[in-house]
Image (cartoon, rainbow, N blue to C red; front, side, top):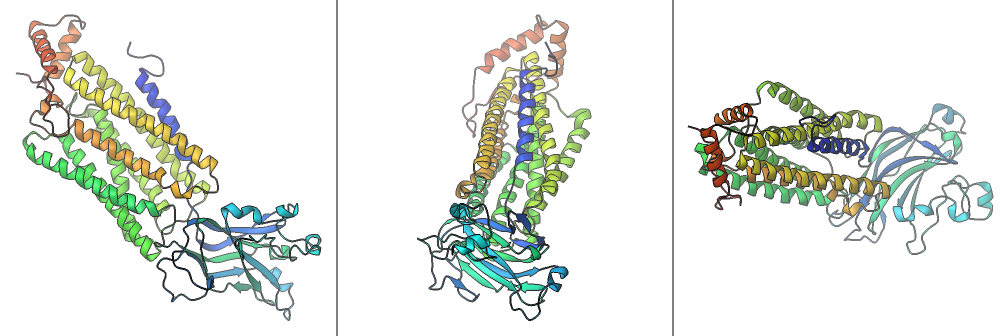
Length: 531
């Protein structure tokens, strides 16, 4: 029973399901906020026009100034959390400018609103039983607000919040420059920044400039700050794994097979990747800008490591070095898939990480994510399909030690897949139930999980295929093909005397598990050695 319709085994069907789930998850994913503005337009909403200037989790300042708002840049920053407005310029249309009176001092108003997400209901007229965002003459008659301004209900326990900063156009000036100032944050939370105006004559106004957001420990956003520590620990983890692998590699260097070099390359790349991400985050945290050189290297190492890790899982599932000495005619296909995945992954990582933490438009993200998602799904399907065929070959050959090795690998891969599916479900639930990022302090564990899972899978491969003085327990030998051919001729029921004797001897020896393996696995016997 070799083929059963679309799926020729339960394992392959399982792979198709996981591939589809993984594809959907990658497409749905979303990322962070923006802090730089380059001639951005305002969006109409109800009776107002707004532009989302950014959102970020900020911790409360550990050191407080007497003045909450300051224009000085010379004061020490350590221990302070703030939002600084730098070079913010509003530019209205010439038509709107020509309508103004040159002698009039204030001919247009744009407001910057900083609000903590838990106080979002204090923006607009909801507390006045009105759906308006800007104050209307009717509401102004009650003394609740001023006409032309955004309606804000001040918090009694925290006067001055939500924060309002006003910038006026003067006379027939086409531009209005916002005063350089810094708003100190004294309460931990997710903060949103909006630029808003209520005058319909300002329709078409553009904003340019930037805002600088800082936490007490540095410039890393609240969501990203824990990742710097995480990458530091992962760098040490890869270093320890690499040291153990190197010692084992040197100890049995005469029995090294080609697969061991591939594993070594993945360990080395993972070590460099984690170290580069740590230094990239550390530099970003101290300077407020992402160093292009380190970021490009980190992104490149990450793309290469992801590619080689997937190729490693694929060739191991194909039985490379175990049931086949080479990949044969499919080598070019494997290499081609790896090259395409590297290019797609590199492009996506560069756009997401290079420069600032700006979010890019949905169409561009979909254009870049879709190829990576499709290729990842393809890898998953190919891995499960190849693993199914490899297990089938080992069962036909009755290579019991190798079969046991691959069963352990299959079980590990199955556990990782189940964990992945569960985590994808959790991530989708997390994003769906927290659209405003109120749970920002735990958001870092989502990307950290995938890095940790990749490391654990690499550890499993290192354990199962560790160098040893008995490489024939998993290495390919020429007698494997002869044995399979002999069993095929007898229909798998009877075998020749020599082969039967070897099978019996092999079955007796399989029960012996050598406990002196450095990674905790038994040294299996030489069951595939041929004369």
